[in-house]
Image: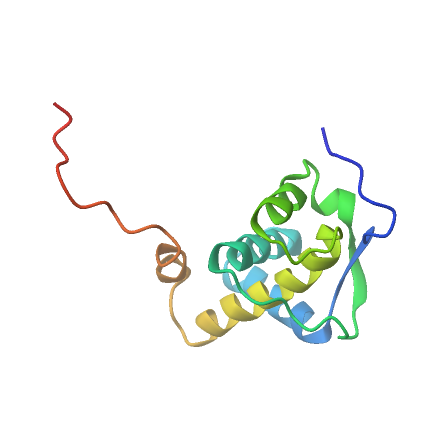
Length: 134
């Protein structure tokens, strides 16, 4: 069950002009059904790569309700667990992390490189050593 958000956290998640363009580009390039899928991927990427969040003072237009974007609360919980710079406002930070992730993914795709290559770089290196289970 989703935990209630603090009253001062964001209930509406916005996107800057650049982030909107990046989201739409990624959605089209990867043939995703909805822009929310690109947005969620961008948050996961920003967390995995420990990207610095986008500027706080950027002009943003509301795009999603926090509760519809994060139905299970998994994004919020991930931010609370992995980042210490949320100041008790994980959705406010998520908004800025998503923008950083969208830009990072878009740059990779704009260079003509495949998403598989991008995602593979996020995986941990295989462990070397004895692979014999017995």
